[in-house]
Image (cartoon, rainbow, N blue to C red; front, side, top):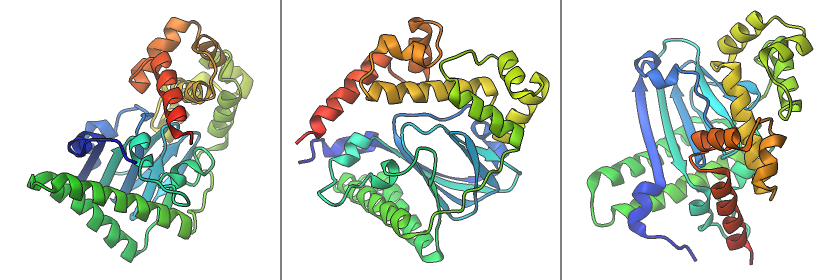
Length: 292
């Protein structure tokens, strides 16, 4: 039985719709990667953009629907100054999971797939119209302030989750092929295999046989992120996985390449928004609440 106050829907759901030139929004141009506790639905209506997801770049053509869970590092990479129209919804998985039922897991499309893969679907014209109609319901309910606005917003959210699951189950997944040059892919593969070790630029350059100068320039131009930020976010993402698996906080930092528990705690809190111990405690509580 769902356990929440209907009035809290306003804070439990964060959504936005924006339309304009990407260079009018500085947040789209910085090198900050995204790794947040909320699950995310992102729809690209128009624009020239690719998505950096975990360790690869993927094209997001107009009318593309994307989903991300709370362990997937991601970032839009703007390719030109074309108009960028997009819709975004953030929500906590524990809130949405309350409405799942036997045989109908509302979060299955977010969790039942390889990490960082199968995140994108191209919508048909009819699917686009349905998605935009549901998103409009969310916006209208927020603006009207009517007595039933919270309920209308909740119903629109649940419809949107059902729609997203149908799309990802029924629609053929977008073709995935490397958009990054081989040297950058090689560097990412090395980082992934050595998250617990020395990942200084000098070490990476030596092991991957590429100059530090080329490494920094190519990585930033291809992904939109600095290599330092990428390493940090991948380490924190791996730390979240280990904490969810029950590993002790004191062990996780070293396993993810942090030089001390203090440095690990500082980086983790800056990115995730809570300390590693608080995150582990919350995850343990969620696991207990999901047990029959």
